[in-house]
Image 1: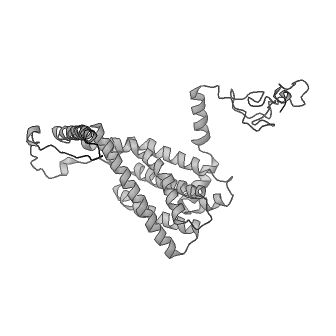
Image 2: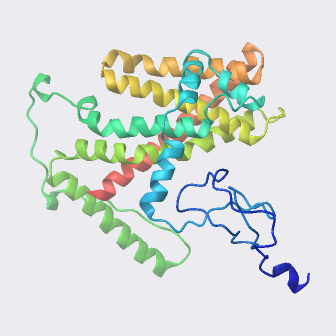
Image 3: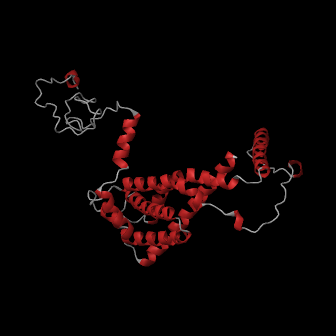
Length: 316
């Protein structure tokens, strides 16, 4: 390559001139010259190297506003997508994988908007959803918590092959665990339910976000002989979790205990129907794979819940 290739282009001799009418880059974000190769760039992308005409020299609030405008706004595509999402399980996934994408909202944007709405509403309703009326419970005598001296300390042993290291680890581990136990006993556990609920509400979105690609991985393993790529299984997972959050949002807004009792059954039927629609296996094969998928996902969810509980205890 010669040095002439890197020379700044002659703007006067160039037949391309900046055209404000064709420029659709957000205000304050575009440059007249490509920052990568130096060519004149009147539009959204450089005609020479293809780099996006975006310089990012804007405030954080501007970027956040663009993100909300791009992903969290509702348009006509959203309403065209929600009805099939509710009443036609698996339809949106099949349409997207078949290439008919422009008429519907993207799976990620749909998931992001619905999940954002659900987790935005959840803190306002969590106190009512998880409220226990202690007045209706039978009154029983609660024994006084045992004094610290009368409780036999919990002792764990560690074996790593190094005696000095084992001794240090055992001492630190046992001190930490027994200290947490004493704190729970000393407070009579009064604040524990609220702490568990608050921590669960705070961490649950992160857990589900992590479990979503794992859910898609389970599908990839179950349908390993199919010609579907992992990305297609991920689209299925996005649509299914979008429906799940939509159903949970309705349950949360209505706040009826009867609806929560029916939610697992509705989600199970929807999942089975979606798998049959998208993957096209027989009813029997779909049922077997559905059972394995639900079992694997429940195990992952239980392990995640235990992690949340451990995190709660660590906060005490």
